[in-house]
Image (cartoon, rainbow, N blue to C red; front, top):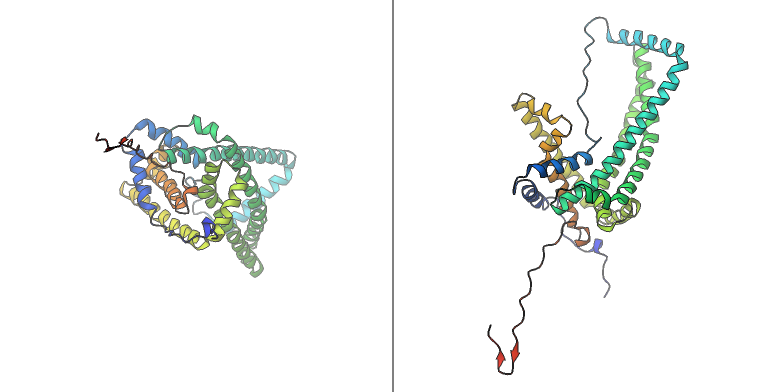
Length: 332
């Protein structure tokens, strides 16, 4: 009899079955019992796992009501243009140094974030709060993930940077002329569409890597490319299920954001200000972060025991068999 590959066997995969165990995981890890030191350690791991991925508050510039915005922009643009041309001797080296500094900061954040992915996964999977052991245990996997994400980031930059430049050039050209030109408008729309088409695959790669490829690396001790190869076979055989997963995760994210916004409005934005603080906000949102990490892990476990990161409960010891005598079993 031919045995079907595990990924092709009929299997009941649902996006809702992982909700209850993920919720129970949150209660077990964080509230049974409540341990402040555990929250701090878990919060640190979760903070590293999300480092550089959440956007901060925006800056609001007040330019007043003096003059027309287009005229002010043209005047400022010409002044900046003249200043740059007159000071190229030091602006170019300064720009290069600033660019290299930004790249160095990005690499450090990406490396720490890659380490944090495995730290937080380890803690959620084993219901523990530790940093030192998983930091060393998964060093090779973290570095492999780091290198993979550098390549993906460079590919994204190569694809998106020209579109951003053309988009900015088209918008600046229209503002300087004082009227929209058909060619510039079409160029801007094309660039926005191109960014959208490039951004979706990159976002999916990022999501699948964090949710499923990292657990495969965690279980197998494999490098990122090998884990992606294994996940790709699973994804190809279960494409519809993973599409439903992405759509359901979007709904969950919208619900979480709605709850946070409601809390901010009820507290007159005090909650929003506190949650925006580095690390403090992560610790306060720890139940949400543990739930999201546990949800993806419990969903992934539905594809088979080889994708289950949670340790199996120990089987109860088997009682010793009663000795047998010629007259029958001896009573205990």
